Image (tube, rainbow, N blue to C red; front, side, top):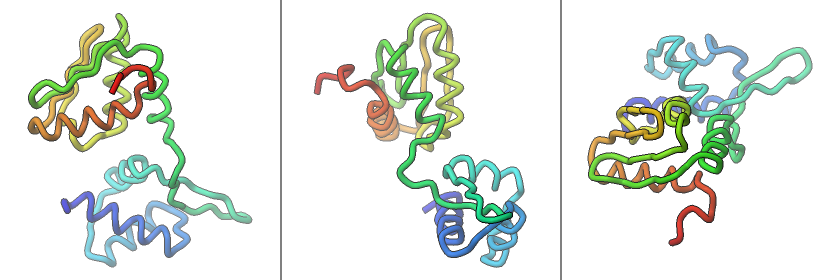
Length: 156
């Protein structure tokens, strides 16, 4: 388990046990568990983990948002349905071909989703090249992205 996965696991446990009202409170709880994190990193973690705030009386606190799809996942699903032309793993990369003019939008959504398999996205007008560490990571990335494509897109 890498450092960020360990931190995410601890954040999930802390949010499940406590009513955490602010990022500063969460940051302090992490520090009590020997994890030092900047506010910017914590903010990214909250976004990546899809944590939500719920309102109770005059306070709000963080909760795990399990089972619901994030806005970025929904956007990727919509883009895949409307603009995906081809999706294929090639060695340590995944090639994503789109309708003209959509590749950069796909790239922005993929960057926002922060898939751990993707090291970099390089996008032109109608092609995104998703660079992964190795062929296995590229295959995993392909399998994840395939789930966002319309059911009729792949004839398995």
